[in-house]
Length: 394
Image (cartoon, rainbow, N blue to C red):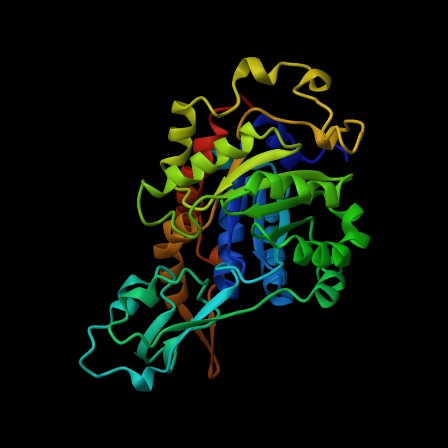
């Protein structure tokens, strides 16, 4: 795998930034706007649902960003017109990232204070909305955080989960021109992982990157080693995404601690590949990593790539070390999901409310069509991206 791809250089340098739009988030205007803003702000990867319409919306945002490269540079942003990797998320079993909240609004008492509506970070729960002409959960906006479930006074909110169908998803994903795939798994699902991997593996050589996302659990490191045995050797790069506290980054600074602790645990295991944080990441994450000296240092960067923590993995398998079985001693990057989306939600809400009449149809204004909102959104996105990018001298 060539290192000419700038996102892979970011992984090596340790300043990789990934935007997680959400594995089940299908609000197309928001996906497009988030992709556009974070690309112009310097993101290395955009992670979206494995849905053709969502992938197309993200690709549209990427192309819009490319056309605005000169404008971004004039405004002081570092974006050079290079495109981040486009990643899709798959799952090998039930996972909170792959679900939607549901309830019957007719079962809600009229005097209910509706705490679900207030707590929803995606504004996916509406009641008697004139704009939506709808009450209940707006499915395409819900990304499965589940915060509405425990606050419902009547216990009528539930979730509907879905699992990737291996035979159908691989041709679909590979035909849409994505650069990377992320597999969400859990300890104990080795057979299910193998089934999904068998469906993907014929196309694996076309991928620039594979990410494996796994929450903590008893026997986690042994499980990750078993996964590596199944997927090696890889032509592309490999990321271990440590899912500390899923979909919680916008709650508060305490959530980032779980993400950092899990990152430390996986780093200590010296698995081949890169370690990237997720799950609870927010504006405090990079500062925490710096304080704990878990980010790449200048001395570390100037070391020869050939001598840079290369070791042979798995004495049992007797496999020779390769460029993609390199071990790393620092966190390679951070993925931001709910926090990154909520950060831009005031801009996206303004944009969504700016509807233009076209005969009797209404269409949402595209972000680049409102220059004020566009660059406000990019500035907000850059305030997050620059936290990890600023540690490297470009």
